[in-house]
Amino acid sequence: FDARAALEKIASYFQPVADERGVTLTIDGEGQVLADVVLFERAVSNLLENALQHTPAGGAITLQLNTVGDRAPTVTISDNGSGIPPGDLARVFDRFYRADPSRSVQGSGLGLALVKSIAELHGGAATVTSEMGRGTSVTLVLARNAENAAAK
Image (cartoon, rainbow, N blue to C red):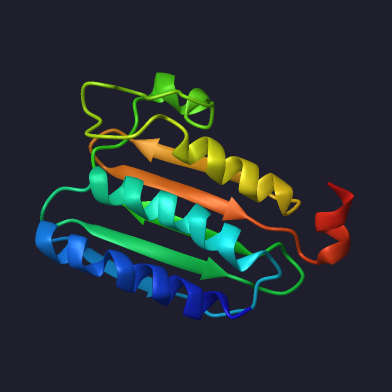
């Protein structure tokens, strides 16, 4: 499916929340992705919802689609929000883990675990980088083709 169109659909759903919070949403990249569209949309929605929760007014979130050559397609959601403490980075994909429950306004700690599971179901992975006070980037890596996804 057209991953750019899927990202635009997801972003349009969250745009009113972003507008209310004064956060800019940007989509970069084009390309096709071989994945279950419903699961793809769930994973990206979870990542965008997290980014919106942790990005201050006047902040920015970018959804970057990369489908270059024979490399596995990736979607990276980056924000310039609060960041994740270094000691928590290794656990953010664990089920029920919440880096700082006092800062979380909602959620059960399953969102990033679900993102990781969806990536793995597609023969891929999910990775995170973050810097306190500068923001977070989560990358969803998908299999290049059906054979790679089926191998998992």
